[in-house]
Image (cartoon, rainbow over all chains, first blue to last red; front, top):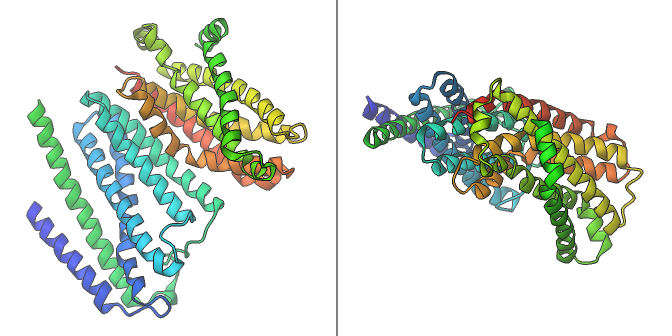
Length: 214
Length: 216
């Protein structure tokens, strides 16, 4: 079952690369550089999905005290941080040729980097607590605070400054030809599968660790 | 709870005295780091002011629950009858008052050393500072309760708190800047609304989750 999911994910990623790098047309103004969007946008989507899962799993843990929910929150936060880092890296690589700089304190860059350090802190807290049950409780509280903080971070940084191009997804019709949208969708699906695969693997490792420690 | 903490603080004055001295030191450090150039200082003042508030707040808030630990009152707190959220609210109000006192002192010192005209900006400034301090203390009190029970707490407390407070910092600095330039509060209404929203969210989450922090 797990290896089947892994196989499907791999196929999806390959299909996404082929769609994004090969089949999708060359963007007229930015040229081939724009193709990094097929990695960048799905990464950030999956990162937000991961942090939403952390929130839900944290609440479930505090209410039900199910260790499985705690492990899910832990795994999801780790994978979320990974994809947030990937978003920052691909964004940097994209920013250099288009904006002329690796880094700028643009609104969405700043938002994502704040999320990155916020959830790094979450993982740090988990690592610092030896008592498993207490660690799970504190991490759940932090996971809830961090998730409710996301909209505040979003708006504060947005008003602070903005330079980023407007999101290319939510705009209607002609701005995005069908083939580009299709390529993006394939990548979205593949990244989501990759997220699920990572989380399942990680939850399994965490469970085995807990069993070995018990 | 509020009463007890305030009484302890009034009797000992240890936190207040230390924080006052710390604030004075910060002013000197800022001055040395930035040089005597007035123009440059004026541009960075709102940021410096909040940096001072936050640094002294970090020190003050971090001690919130350590006092209970040092004096072996932790078990008493946990065993106390009634809702744990009462402890949270009590500690929050105590921290709030402490921070507001420190901020008032720092503000006067800033006005004195950097030659600011505070009187005209004071009403607006008071609103911004009050809103920002509630948001800061609400999360700070919750996190202080958690990190008091953890290894490397002095390190972990700011590391957890600062990223979460990033939106509050952005909002307060921008609003303070506008108020110091003589603009009305109406021109920064969106920032004030954001701060008010942060206050509500943080206090609500704090009250709801504090039970889980104090379990064992």
